[in-house]
Each structure stands twice: as C-alpha cells, then as structure tokens.
Image (tube, rainbow, N blue to C red; front, side, top):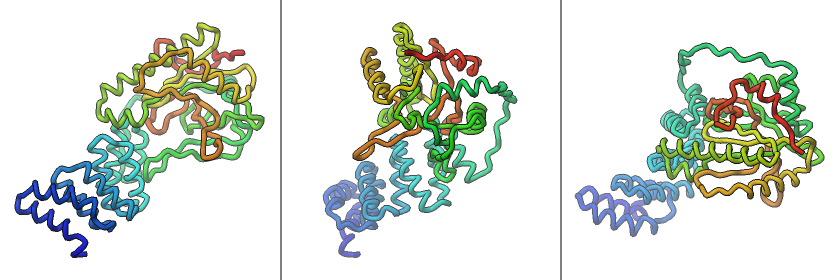
Length: 364
C-alpha cells in the first residue's frame, strides 16, 4: 500500500506544512490516476474535503462506491455532501442503502429524517423517527370524521372501478422511510373503501380491466426532482411553483368545462395536483390515452418548473409496458400525512368532500 498511496501521502504532507497550492496541484493530477483501490480513493476524498474541494470529493466517494458499493463511510459522507449541496433526493438514495447495510446507523437515520422534513415528507420522517426514538403526539383539537354510508362507498367504487381482482395498499418501510405498495389479490371491497375514506389505509387501484378498458383518466402535476434539487431550501420559490400548478390545473378544468367535458381538480398530497375525467362507460385505454394527448395540446404551457403527466394504467418498461397502480383520491398521502382533496375553481377544498363526490359526472 505504501507505493500505491505515495501521492496521497505527498498531498497530505504539503497540506501539513501549509502549502495548500502544492497539495491541490497534487490532488488534481494524481487523484484520477490512482489505482482502483477503495481506501486510496477514500483518502483522496477526505483530503479534498479538508481543502473544500467538494466536487472532487464527491467524485472520489463515487469511485470508492464503484469499487466497493458497501463502503459505509463513503455512503454516509457522499450523502452528507449531496445534502449540503442541495441534492436532497440523491442523498436519500445513499442513506437508504447505508441503512439497509447497517440498520442501527443513527447518524444516517437522523440525516434521512432531516432531508424528508426539508422535502415536505412529514410522514416519511415520522416513520423513521418512530423506529429510532419515542415520538410524542402534538396536542391538538379532536377531529370527528363524517359518517360514511353505502351510498358514498358505492359511488366511489363506481367512479374508480378498474381491475376486477387486485389492488394495492400504500405503506412505509419504517427503517428507511421508503414508500411501498403491498399487492392484495382480491377485489376491492366496500370495507377497504371505507377504511380508505377514513384514512386508516391508502388504496391504490389498477385502472385497467381484463379487457384493456378504463373508466377514468387524468393528469398529474408535480415538481420534478431536478427542479427541487436546483432550488433546494428555497421555500418561497417552491411555494410559487405550487401556486402555478394550482392555477394551471384550474385552467385545465375551466377549458374542459367550457367545451362540455366534466373535470375535477384535486390537491394530491404535498405540492402535487391531479385532474380527473370520468367516462360514461369503459373505454379502451389507448382511446383514453389519445384523448389525454389531444386535449392537453389545446392548453399551451410555457413554464418548465413543473411537469404534467397523463395518469395511465401502464408505463413503458424494457421491451414492453408494465401495469401500474394509481393512488386513489380522498385518501391520506402517507409521505406528507396530508389528505388528497378535490378543490373548486378558486383552488379551495370543498367543505364536504363526500357530498361533492356524489356530484361528479361522466362525459360521453
């Protein structure tokens, strides 16, 4: 090792005698020319950090992980630097990997909680905290849910009818705070729908039936990860984008209604929106996909700070398409611990969501 880490030791010598310029020069030339040994690149990364050379440090930690993907210190240090530079979602990737390797790594869990809170994922942060320490509930006024009868349950099941057998329940991996969907190979029952509306569980349905038809379609508006990373910590900017998304989803609803298409906007968890269209009968999913493409072309959009994606029953994967589940409205978004609620054309949630559910209409 002495010959292989000669230039690492040389750079450290320059740093110790106070010649930072020589140390930087040695690092910049020899760091990328070093043999692919994980500990040598880890030492380069630490040297770079000492000299505040953050990008080369992250690159060296990345080289360590290419050689040894389970290097615990490199996983944590890279996640820490990514978080400091505002790349929060990329940081969570490495923290989750580390926690899977070392479930009791408290520093990693603490940092993961902090990042989830920055991203507005209060539910995920709480899940990780509950796994590591006692969480005392905040004092608040009692909440009394409205009664849910067969009429509302049947209406919900009619509007969001899909795959005959099979649905998912949203859950959280309490060790890493990752969202998961547990598949249940059963028809959606009235009891499941009631539990969903009460917030006891969060249902995600498969929109497409066995004959490749769907009863509903829509769009989802969200802030892409890249934009979140570019503006990490800029709460005012992200709130502005949230307001833009709300205005745009309302614009879609207004234009649709103007041409006789019933449409229903929804605030979906934290800084996301959806808008729903319901068909009067089951339509082939390709026809629904074509409708979404053609309709959106009528509504110009010049802002790239958020994305507008069709809600479809499948997504491309490899050489084909894979069926995908869709979290259903009025449920509790486990990531942010906020309800998904229908909103009016002023952007305000309806006071009685179940009464509004009865008013939703289909189009021909």
